[in-house]
Image 1 (cartoon, rainbow, N blue to C red):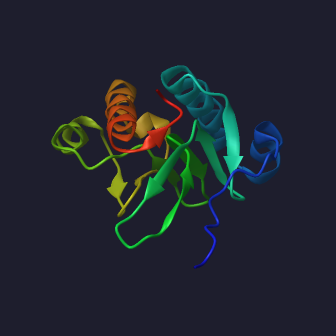
Image 2: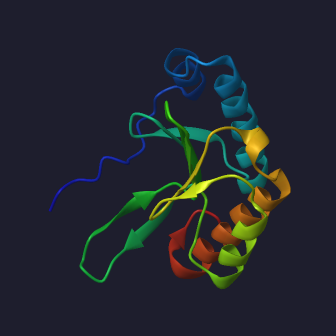
Length: 143
């Protein structure tokens, strides 16, 4: 079975932001997201894979037998947009999306151009919902 690329690396988060993020607005938004997600999750930021900043961790196992570890909350400051890993497919999360603001939805993440495009309090609610879902359905450091 293939090893997942999204695993804890131990790399320095702020060094990553300083060297990888070349746009000053995106750099400021990255630092703000780090502060928010750290406060909301209660976990220090850690690098997962080469570009994901994650908070906390949980163990997942699919019916297929594939399993691994992932951050409870996270984001990646990609060139085109931020990838936010904060969504759990619950009815409440789906309802919250209506108030989030300007975003695109991927299979497992939310894409935003900048923090000013979204409602931060709605993002907070999405994060809380995701933490609750992960805590209920997986082996989680959030307990």
